[in-house]
Length: 102
Image (tube, one colour):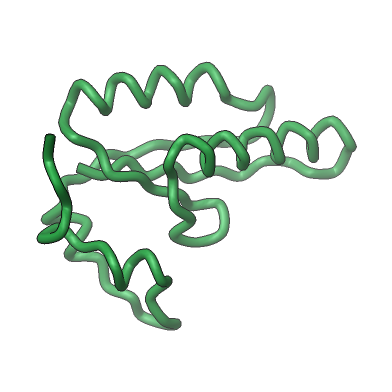
């Protein structure tokens, strides 16, 4: 499974920029990879991991802005089509066939 986080956060004031930076760093430190600007995803090992990471995400939410989450299966995620641009390094190196399950 993959958890995908989409967000739009205000950055007009110093406090808003700080909240953005803290949320962005949390995502990177928690194992999320940037798919696009303000779109991050991570691989999960089932529903228990989904609940765990959802709780971790809820604790780190910034006070303002819009944050959305969707969870999709690897098969659904593999159906993603890149219309313009090139795949990122992580997308080339890791696919569903290479994922290890514990």
